[in-house]
Length: 264
Length: 184
Image (cartoon, rainbow over all chains, first blue to last red; front, side, top):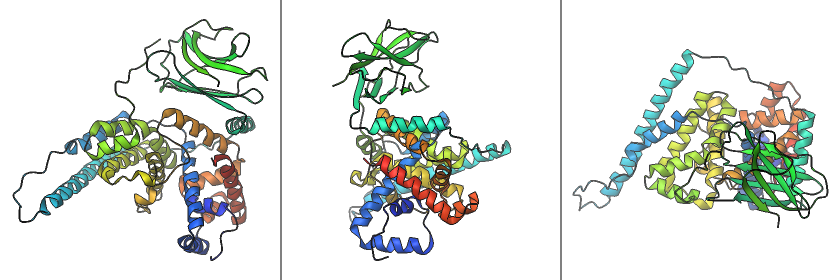
């Protein structure tokens, strides 16, 4: 392939790894010669990589973290290399150091592999056939996602960062708001609430009383979100806030405010 | 309401933590693990559909990070991108029972977005998920077979029983949509 690819999508197909045979060889040969296309291929690779973020969220067992840290512990804060007397061969000390680290890593890797094989064996003994569920997406989901994307990408959308009212700004929130298109909000690191309490998001208009944008729960990591809540259209926002309210929420804020962000 | 957990140490950047890891700092590795293990594991689990195998991939990737942190070159792309690429490649290699097809250096990439903070991760995840949600079901299926199972055009055609031309058309339409949505 001496000419530039006719379609930009070819770079995405290449990054995805679906091209094969003669087409693949020709494109690779062209990329080696063409700086501009190489740059486009690199951009496509980054874009395609993002697809992985759509994986259903899954949490590894805490034992993995423990095993990892145990495996590196013998190498942690490595002491200085032993003072071997090798003055006539100054390269020996650094060479030994590199070899020692490499050997230690190899040993650690083999230990991990051994550990993993043992675990796999246990797992196989109680193996279960996993049936992969085919994801059925609803028309409503697609419609809503399109609206979310539209809102996130729109030039008229304002982006408001909400920070903790007190103490360290560990809990955070972000609101994307367009008076015409609606509101997308998400928060992270919020503390878990008692069962009879809930978080409630408020739109604080430039004039008038706060308007409830809905209540939300948080997952184990303290993440919560509200997508496109039913709000009256055309209301300019002065700020957004999150309060803690009794279960089911309240028409007007009554509880402690935990997040606040002004719309600039 | 429970109290907000304190965070005595200021938030370190990926680069600061990697430098510390290169010096043999175990807590720095733990912090990077806490920051990225969810993403890495989710990708590996989606590919392999097996918790044990996905955990092995996860542990291997962070162990490799420990061993190669001294060679880290920030100019070649951020840690989040490398971890995402590694998770996909290693999991697919394992799924297809093949030897690693890429090296660590091949996996360096500059993502069009930042994954260092949870807020940034959430925003990017929301955007990518929404982008996939708007694809037609056959387009999404073809894209997922390619991304999560490492299939080529002809392999997807064989798996789905669709003509090769149809598979290519669907994938191109899906990729065109993604490109429009995910371009900065």
